[in-house]
Image 1 (spheres, helix red, strand yellow):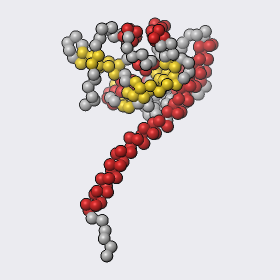
Image 2 (cartoon, one colour):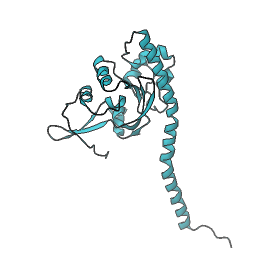
Image 3 (cartoon, one colour):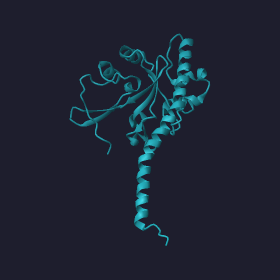
Length: 222
């Protein structure tokens, strides 16, 4: 006689398959994200070359906006990371250039560059946060008028530095502190995208934060 599977046996097999999928899916997603870091790294290096040529032609004057280096880049496609499904997460640059821009560009004001250079001569120029994890999805809801990707992503950030090297940095941009009334506040500062020097008076000045501010652990996302 041929004996078929019982209902219980089939349920056990299905549960095992579901567990395997649950275990493998994060691994596959991380592998896919890692694979997509290669073209993003290539984009950052090409944008660095365009930035360097811009500086050479302008006597060392930094561009105010990343899209200003387009004539030296020659290709709009390199301004977009393959993981950018938001049609340009840098909305101000995207509007200015009228094409998608995915990369954060260090502010070109002299005082901000001087502060960064005083603690890190090889600080970052460009950064891509899309290779990290989405910690606060509420900051990606464009429909509500709230779109602040730098406050949404944590973790792996690709950063091209002044010497042209691309660094894989772990960035946790969110900082929490208690205000004068004891109310928990959340703060974000672009400083951490460009350097691994996370503490000091220079960071406080750059972030326009009180020098004596005391940070506390941030609560988990509800």
